[in-house]
Image 1 (tube, one colour):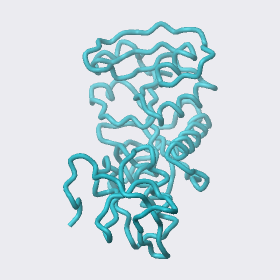
Image 2 (cartoon, helix red, strand yellow):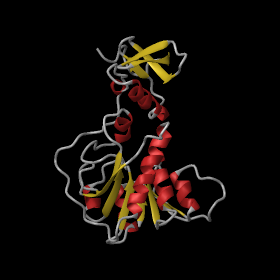
Image 3 (cartoon, one colour):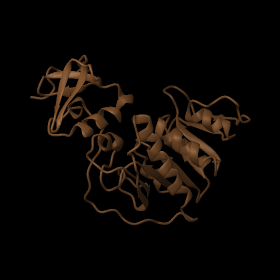
Length: 271
């Protein structure tokens, strides 16, 4: 098994979990701008804690291949070999998909919330939490579904917890799959999208409960993006019991401190 990943917290936690049981033969990462493709020789296991996906692979003795262009990948994947990726946000070219079987871990219950950032909408309370393992095809997150599982996020207190909980559920689901990996079930055409959130998506709706509002702020904390309060026409940051801005909710109020408007956003962002 070869793995394809981005340098992100989701890929890190998912691969950390599965490599404890099934180390990969190779990790493929997109190369930084201006860097040619190259293979990093595996190093012995390190005692220091890895802080990136590449360092994690190296600590497991897994070579890292930096992909400058997609054509570079094919010589490193034998015919019939499976390529596994977790929440990969880029479209894979058709000429790759015609020669390589790729399975993707997606943090939503497809066909709902296809796209690069479903966890934002889960945090906002727009969708139930869950993961899907599916085959990649030429479109974003539309390939046949191999397995799905609901995820309990009731104990998550911040965005790192939200990501870690999804990746652990996905890893357990992946490790429980039979070999070879099933062909999967075709997805319905209908579904919904999970595009990258804009400033207008960080609105604290007064019709939400206090709990929903609080959870949304807690579970998107790593983004360091302020939240818009329509009633007071203000941006706020993290909730605080002694904050100077009141956030009206369906069942009461929350307090927060004021924040500056995010860059590039007019005032107000919503008319």
